[in-house]
Every structure is written in structure tokens, then in C-alpha cells.
Length: 199
Image (cartoon, rainbow, N blue to C red; front, side, top):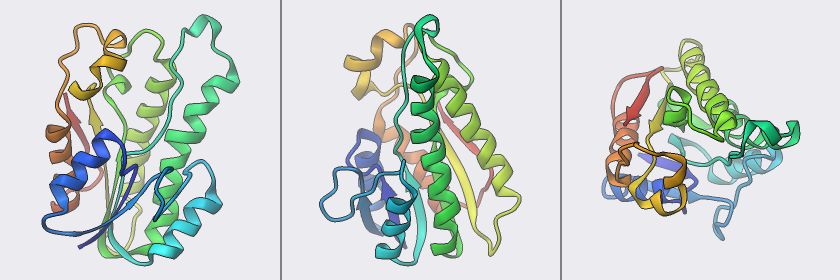
């Protein structure tokens, strides 16, 4: 299969490439990519990426920024960061990407554990991740031509505990290699409308 991976330079993106590349043709895109740059907060950038890559069999997104900070000082502009980036950016990848997928193709997005397990300073992340889970469930019943859509909801990564550990007290971090297996399941499997929890 020809698989487009957005967010390919991140920790999860690299793990997903490692899991899928032995069997598939990978097109790696990210904000910092020299070959296939994309800014998912801009529709023109998303459209240009798909037009350049052409038809694919699967789309995987491990991209998206959020705002972490206390609710007492959070502004609407700060909250909007996650809405425009991780939420609407990935929704745009799905809405635009469906037209570049071959019949029977798949879309896999990324949410996160705080959709159901809130943390301090994580209201933006909880809202965005829960919305992504809901979007995938709703989109799955409407996609045509046998196209499937799922979302992977990972726990905090072992590789990221140095940065994000203080936000996740008592959480059992998971390795990126284990998270990558959920993307493999989504791409190579048959299910749709699923939230794959890697907790």
C-alpha cells in the first residue's frame, strides 16, 4: 500500500513508519519536512500536499498541537490553538484526504487519553481529543467507497515523560512502539469508527 503519514518526524510518527515501512510504500510529511512539507492549520497547505502526493491507500495523522495551561488564566485565543491545530487540522486531513483515497482505503487520526482521563491544565486537550473521537465515530457511517476511519488514543509516551511527565502523575506511560501497533491495526485491519485506546 501507498501510505501518507503526516507528523512523520514526531515520536509516534517515527514509530509508525518503523512498523509499516517494511511492508508498504511510505510518504512522510510534516511541518519540517523538506520533501513533503505541510501545515495542517492551513487548508491550502493540506490541499497542496494531497495534490502533490496523489492517490494513496491510507492516510495516517500523528500531528497536532494543543495548549496546556491552567483554566483560571486560559484565554479564548489559547484554547483556539488546539481547535485550529489538532482538531480542525486533522478533520481537514480527513475531509480533503477522502477524495484522494483509493477505494477501500483508510484514514487514521490521533486523539489521546485525556479525552476520558482529564489532567490539570489539560482542558484544551480533553475537549479536542474528545471531539476527534466523536468525529471519527460520526464520519465512519458516512464515508463511501469502502473507506474506513479510526482514531488512536494513546497514553503519555515513555519517550516523552521528561517533558510531559509532570502533567500525568500516576499514569502508566506506554512505549511508542506499542502505540504504533494500533496504527498498524487501523491501516491493515478491517474495522471502522473505532477509538483504539493504548493505555
